[in-house]
Image (cartoon, rainbow, N blue to C red; front, side):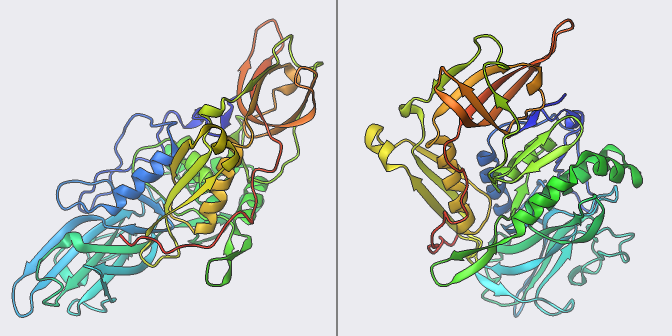
Length: 483
């Protein structure tokens, strides 16, 4: 049995084929190159690295095409730059934004350009090849240079269609705006890939733009199967249907999209509970992708070897009760965390979704009682783009997990506990800790199977005394720092 999830990188069935292979850009080619697995690591570091990479402008040579969900500030990779001096000067720029459709038929067209700026000045949509402005190309497949869903842009009618790549074409004719002829001053806010949604039986219902973390996770899984069975239509869908616990998917998806009330500093608004504005800019196995998506929505994923289950951050019913009767020998032990090693001051950095420029913002949660005892122990984390409400709630959840519940325990359970997975809740009753039905979160599991003995499991558990998540743990936003 494969035991995975909750920050674990042992997602066995994806080991043979890295999921998110981001290829170097080449004109009219959508390449994915082989690489070794990239697994584990910090989801915070990955979020910060992805944000930095897509916001940096690449002017020459190759560049990585990101896989992008939700809204992001993107500089992109310059693929064409044609400057014509005159009165006024004319500058034509074509900039690659990220991965679109795959040559294997995998969907992934982008939604739109929200806003495009040159040197801070907003550009308008151009209706033709002579009018200044921009045109957005969603990354669809072209059957030929002059046909298909994504044709050659009218600004450069003798160019290429850049099939399968989402890109922006911009024409500047204002003498002031392009006098410096600086393509690196082009920035845009874009809505990324479309995804499919599914019913409780795993049947696809729609294909459209969504930032629901559940839909993003399933899109990654479906893409994995499309690459595992290249050129086949039915096998990837059949594999997806079998691998996902669709009841848990629907519960998680509906939980994410439920509207919650938030006073944003100006008025009370209703926003979806969790969104996934997340980008992948490097090779990563599926387990790592799931880790990042779940970390940005307070969720947990599990793989029991047969199906993947997604668990929202709700108060769940314990799946097992440990007592002296099913704990092996004297394996039970308590491990209190050292106050000097526990973070008590949490800072999260993100781009504020409610700022028109997706400006940099941060939020913090302090545990003043602990700070008075040992001083400030800071933990700075990076989150993807999101509403400040979501950042507040996730930061508070970090504090509850890492600061408020310092007691860990380890034990070995008998064969009755082999169904327990990381991310589950259990209860423990044991005289050594004076516990009676103490609620605990399962942090790690190690299964041991002997040929002539019953299976046993070694567990690391965290005692949880209060709810880990609260919809109301958020405050008003402050103006973000415009980049």
